[in-house]
Image (cartoon, rainbow, N blue to C red):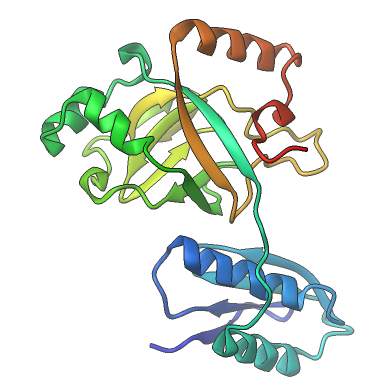
Length: 239
């Protein structure tokens, strides 16, 4: 299957790449979005795992020309790259925060400490944001940890839970039902409607999972909740 255009009503279309979700695919989509931004008639751009939705002003957009240009840019592959930000995500992996650690260890044949070491060995890339406001789908998770969802989802997953499923890792910004395997807890303030950009993480960002002990986790969690520790404290590429 080749790259293709999918119609989306009278004010949008989706460019779908012939590719599987991966950091390189996310980089391509971000470069395409940057190349299309500011074109006459383009109102907004929304990258996903392997697609880019282009929202249009139907009164000013030349839809056919924009669709053709999107396909041309995708085929050429020469749009300038767009750099994401690098974040540190402190995670407490104490057993109380990781109810699925033993299950993951049993299914992978690894000790719980080895599971954590493998997951945190290299930074992950935010491939998409969705499901819940601010929920980051991150990858690639090492193949040994690419387990399916739980057979029985939980009705309530605590906010801040770090979990894995289907080759991805994610952090729940809100309490929610969920079927991912919970391994730890992260106090990162992932979503705040009062911020100019409410979702903290964006596709293309790098996320380093940094194991912390219970005392440091409690300090960070308290500071974030009180507004004493802001998002910039977790930004690794800050000046």
